[in-house]
Image (cartoon, rainbow, N blue to C red; front, side, top):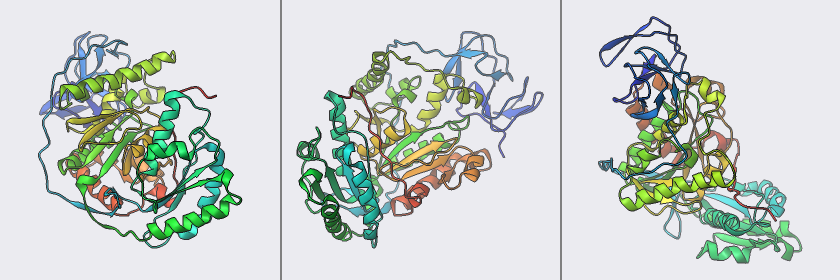
Amino acid sequence: MKEYIKINSNDMVAVALKPLSKGMVVNIDGENITLLEDIKQGHKFALVDIDANKPVIKYGAAIGIAKENIKKGSWVHTHNIKTGLGDLLNYTYTPEYSPLAPTDECYFQGFRRKDGKAGVRNEIWIIPTVGCVNNIASSLEKQAQKFVSGSIDCVAAFPHPYGCSQMGDDQENTRQILANLINHPNAGGVLVLGLGCENSNIDVLKPYIGDYDENRVKFLVCQESEDEMADAMELLSQLAEYAGSFEREPISCSELIIGMKCGGSDGLSGITANPTVGKFSDILISKGGTTILTEVPEMFGAETLLMNRCENEKLFGETVNLINDFKNYFTSHNQTIYENPSPGNKNGGISTLEDKSLGCTQKSGNAPVVGVLSYGESVKTNGLNLLSAPGNDLVASTALAASGAHIVLFTTGRGTPFASPVPTMKISSNSALYQKKNNWIDFNCGVLTEDVALDELGQKLFDYVIEVASGAKLKSELAGFHDMAIFKQGVTL
């Protein structure tokens, strides 16, 4: 098992992968360094002498400022470094990226829809336009399980509390998210279930949906039906017959769209799980595919790295707006922009918000940024895209699905059972979590602390994603979990 790691060649600190004792001699880059203190797992120690008021470099970037002189071999944490962030920042575009070299094309076994889109699942979705019909949707889901056969993977309802009593952008966002899910190619058939008197009723929603396959999408207004359950089951029967006609076929990975998200981070998240996802992202993009990075508050402190990887100045400006708009969202609600790491983060070795954000953004790999998406906006450009959404697990994962993600990769140091509208792969940062919650975790990156190389694990994750895209079920899918949450941003009438 590896005992410590220097993440980037320019780093001034290394991270303990297991508890290290005072007096221990570590060898990094051919130099012996004697530890001056005990170092807990996930915590940092200095590789060089660091002067007071100078940046402390980890992940190849500043994670804060030294509060005092720090000697080589010393523990580096909240007692001797502080954040270097301020509320108001000026950004300058300094391009620092190289296009990824193309690699050989590969294929997954997916479903080709009539509109030309590709899906990785052939599911039947029941989508309420308003929370008032949630119970009907959930009841229909149970009764419609009899339609799961052949190429049909499952029948799933997506209850939510919105669709009425909303105003302005808040209501627009709900309509756009619902429309995007209705159009998602992972669904071979969709029943749109309305009440009839809601603000976002079916007639209002249809322009957001746009052109649709009438065999694939059916509508039911419950107030207009004498027996909505019977009528809905008849429509679901028709949808099942249609969806069942689709079979898996080879589809290029260049059409694969993968969302990237993290939650419940620990001291190893930015060292094992997130870099592995970053390697995966680079592999997929090198084959012409697409990844989406979200959680804008988790970019604060690392945003300049993403800005400088923008392909052009227009994208740079859009990324600046992405960051500033979310800062304004915080300040408009009288909340602090730069939240300090939680006690759990600090106990795990995360010292500053920069430290946390730089670990989070490891998921983006090294590809240039080719697209910046507003909340509810669909992917248009193959490659690495940034998406405006909060850090909340359910909201951000739903946003990724609504923007077109076929699968969401979710890294975690603590574990979670939740799902999203699309297959949601749980990736553990440590082996203890993988062993303890094997019913939740699909892929373990804790092996990076052993004798597995990052490039090897990144390729292994890529291969596994192809298996999942081709039909292999994830733990949350086997449990029958499907979740959805919409970003609430306005008043409720």
